[in-house]
Image 1 (cartoon, rainbow, N blue to C red):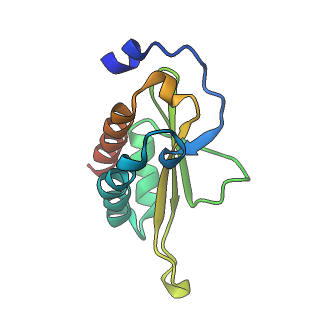
Image 2 (cartoon, one colour):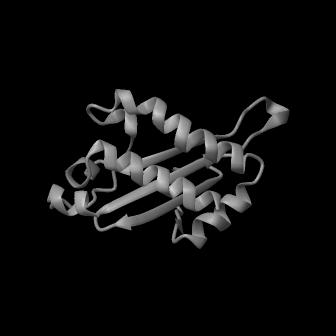
Length: 132
C-alpha cells in the first residue's frame, strides 16, 4: 500500500491491458512471473476452470463480459485504487494437445501507481488468495 501511495500516480485506468513483458525493465521478472504466478495457477486449476471462477469471485474478482476475449475464464480484480488486474485462463484441451495457459494483464497505467517489484508482489498475492 505504501508503495502505491508513494508512487503518486494520478492517471485513471485507460482500459488498455498489457502483459508484464510489455512494460519497461521487466525482462528479469518474466521468469519470476512464470514460476511463482502462472505455473502454480495452471497446476492448481488445469481442468478446473469452474473452480478458478469460484475462487476468483470469492476474493472479489468480477467476471469480464467481452466478446473479444476468448479465454475460458476472464476476471477483473481491483486490489488497489486505480490498479485493475485482469486474469485470463484458457483451460487445457487434452484431446487437441493444448495445455492450460494463464496470463495476468495490467492496465497500461500501472507503472504510474506501482513499481515493478510491487507489481510482482501483487501478482503473487493474487495467486496465493486464489489457491487457498
